[in-house]
Image (cartoon, rainbow, N blue to C red; front, side, top):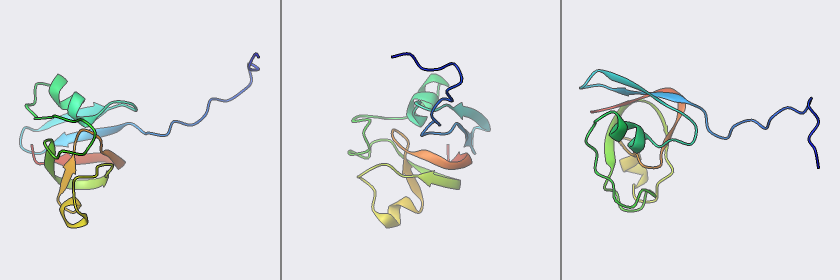
Length: 100
């Protein structure tokens, strides 16, 4: 089946956002389909990961500003107020600031 040339693509389920690292003064783009952990590692930022599914808590990092989209199962509701699992979380807004 051919798709007509005038068909519009489906909207992406994830939006790009900018990861701001407060201590190192870095700003890193995170594209749809990329994890914050991968972006951090590619930028040379040391971050521990193990399960990469938000289960183990190895990659949990303090966040300072923005609105994280928590997709983990390791943090309690109270812990999510200050921390984020960078292997699987996204941002609801255009930026997310981490304490890195």
